[in-house]
Length: 307
Image (cartoon, rainbow, N blue to C red; front, side, top):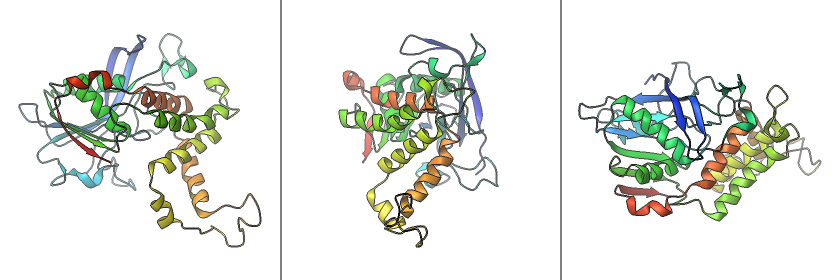
């Protein structure tokens, strides 16, 4: 299934903080066809380090399909013969240097200065993400969502959808959700993700545009994200206690690595080179701030929680 990345523009958008952003853009893609009633749509918000690329390929030569390819498509759980699937890049999407990602965030040009926002970009929230998504759905002619389904940070967005627009959302599927609010333990876990970035000397308080970027800090941050996102059995099954080179045993030098560390270093560094540190920090803060506890009486949808 080949899909096309599309661009949605919002001339002016007021954040929950009160700050106003101009010329906001988010990328999106769709699968299937919206019916005449506009009520067969399913919105799929993405996880923390994900993008709108939920299924299919942009090009036949792409090595991997979208992240939920196993469940989005004809005859699959999110059946594109029956449903119109929509997914969008979040504000401050961390993969801003990926040419297939469209987002407004710290790397975007501030129209008032003609330079990237950088450290001056405001705090954003899960609620801000969802309100941009609602504007997108309105522009597409969606009158009601059959469901919102998302994993991790996507699950938080699904919950926010249900609290913000209770009459618009019929069903919510939350995969590895943090619950109705981000609990203190997770708030601290997210702080540990951010710490390597803040400690990287190239971070310079977020004012690194035009200079060396905090790639080392971002690399360590993505290693923590990966380890926290996956079960310990994944590491045992894939790597065991093996080493990349038997001649370079970890017992001989602190510089010698186990296979799992070597693999994580390589993958995380690749991810760091298409990411932005300021965007990463703002996504983490958005997750830390999430709560619908004070709005739970508004919920009307049917819920499926998958731990």
